[in-house]
Length: 129
Image (cartoon, rainbow, N blue to C red; front, top):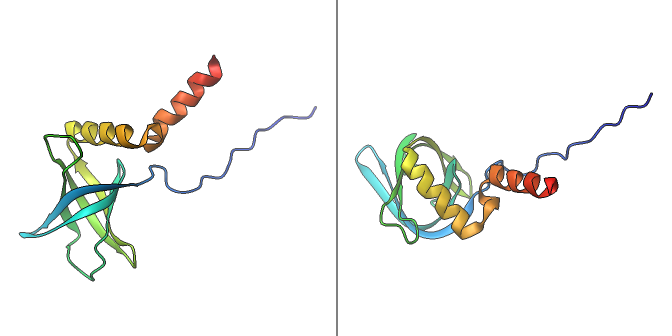
């Protein structure tokens, strides 16, 4: 008896893709700060277009002025330099209301593709009907 198998496609890219936003941001690290405009953002990390060798220590706090929002998004992060691309800030601690604010902004700006779990649920729901 032959057994049917379904082959899952290989995962390409990152689980939560980063999207470019033209917003103001600043980063604090032990009393020093850096600010700029424009970054790539996901619900798990941010990529800052700062390519200098060492503006940050490993633990930083990121603040982002999201579009049409009264509050700034705040996240405690770890920073790693990716040569030629900038600094990747991996979110370690984000308040639930800030995460909700970020998720709402990403879905508003880029649709459900910004949150893959929502996109998968939408596909599953549509396939059931």
